Amino acid sequence: MKICIFCGANSSTDPEVEKKAKEVMTFFGQNKIELVYGGAAIGIMGTLATDLMVQGGRVTGVIPQLLMTKEVAHGGLTELIVTKDMHERKQKMYKLSDAFLIFPGGMGTLDELFEIVTWRQIGIHGKPVAIMNINGYYDSLLEFLDHAVKQGLIKQKDRNIIFASQKWDDIWTHFAGSQNG
Image 1 (cartoon, rainbow, N blue to C red):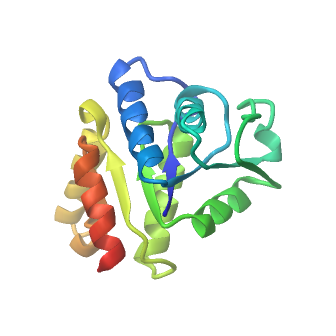
Image 2 (cartoon, rainbow, N blue to C red):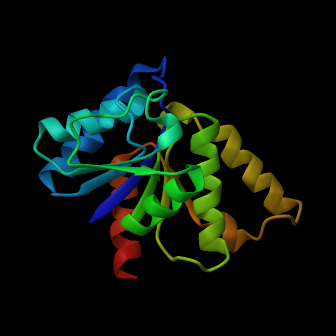
C-alpha cells in the first residue's frame, strides 16, 4: 500500500506533531507501507521522509521544479520525481497513492486536501482521505465544514469524505475498511 501524506514544509511549534509523525512512520516501516509526499527535506515533510528512510522504508517524493531549492529537495529518497508545476505534482501524487493522510500544514496542505476531496466528490477517485487532527489543529476547519452542511452548501455525503482523528489506529482502521469496501 502507498499512502500520500500532505503536510507542511515548515515545522510545527507543537512537539506532538513530530511525535505523531514518528509514530506513523514506525507503523509504515513495520507494515511495509510506502510513503508518497511532497519531496522536501525540511519541516514536517522532511521529518516523515527521513524517519521512514532510516528504517529502510520506501519513500517517493514529488516536487515541482520551482520548489527544488525553496523547499530543499530531499536527497536520500527511494525516488524523487520532479514535475513542471504544482498541478502536475498533485496529479502524480494522486496516481501513485492508495489513500491520503493530511497532517498539520499551511496553505499548500489545505489546497492539496481540498483538491483531493473535490476529485473524490466528483467521482475521479474513491480513495480514502483522512485528517490527522493533532491536538485539535483542524477543529475549526471541521466545524466550518459542518456549518456549511447546515447551510446547505455542502452535502453530508461529501462532508463524510473527510475522516478525522487524532489517533493513527482510527485512521488506519478507516483506510483498511475503505480498501476492502
